[in-house]
View 1 (cartoon, rainbow, N blue to C red):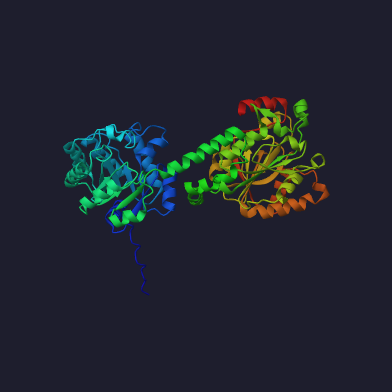
View 2: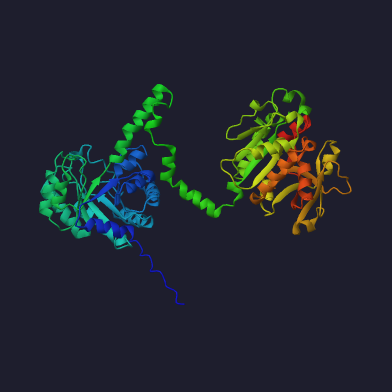
Length: 552
């Protein structure tokens, strides 16, 4: 069989090429001002084929004057964000070129490196002043010196399609049509790719007069900021190449921001403005948040996104005495934060955010934000198994993912979550090899017997649980289970079924989680054991509270 090859997808022309096509096209084209990444993306989405990175608006978004107070490297950095946010060409308002011929040629190289399609430089002295501020008092550059900037820029460019537009300020400075034409001719001879003829009049008579005399020697660009009332058809009939809407996105945003700020300052609430501002989701969309989510699906380990957690925190912790008189053990403060907050922080550090807490004693006292809650009103007469059953039966709107189960009185390092995440087994627990320290504390603990004790050989073999209980003898004990269980997503339905069956049996009303682990093994499930030494602390006594402060 002969394979039929798909025709190759044609490469899209470079931005420089597309800008040159707009510049020399037979139809009148329009450029929109943009001054940062998000305004650039808005301009492209609106349908503009190219953008104008205007000096006035670029400086304004930095909060400085349009007098070269923002350095050219700061402008360059913002341009890089704008290029990354779009796919269309950008024409930079490069002021005077930020200096002499040497500055211009370095500027051109840097613009090409960042994917900017073209630059416009104006024939004034550096540092420049905005053309609409005392324009007739501004000095123009010497023609020969300005031509040196054009020649240097053209010699420096590596892409033949990169364009240098020269802005003639003769009308702004009050020199008239003859001077405008004289300068334009010199700049054209020096290699300029197009002329931007500027005027501060409220009518287009100066730019129209220039275009009639200039004819079609090179493309002519205009900026009708002052003569805005002129019908666009006039520009089209005159044969102009590009029209630049030079500052209108910024000007549209300013009154909206001023009104919003004044309203918030006056009313001190969001009710009157919330329905008049863009939703946060629109910002996320413009930022490309969905692309990042898709990339996370491709590149990030699953545990960091899809996992969910059940924290069993129904008990009072009466051994802590007065500390739990008005709050559950999980809300006892450790270094200024509730014990539960330290547990949540460990999960969050591993990228796990879907956390459900089972409450019992004084449920209203457990109210940390961003968590889901399930209550076990029978906590005093039931054990951990029933609390787990309540949580597993609760709706999970996000659904899916691995399941982590832990106690509300055990704090641990994030390292243990990474350890749990690595094995692909259906059920994984962590056992502390330093279990004898727990025996010396004379308290109930969940000890484990395994297929192999901890040793250097255990690092290279898979170890599984044979039994978990509080009464395992020292001779058969291989460690202490510290209350962390990971259940693979595919095994969660089996866990839910077993927990439901056991919780429905009167004899299991007070069952603990170690009973569940042993029941899993009895059913033929393989519970993987990963050994660790330390990195966790069970808070059962006042001494533990003090130790937890050092641990945290």
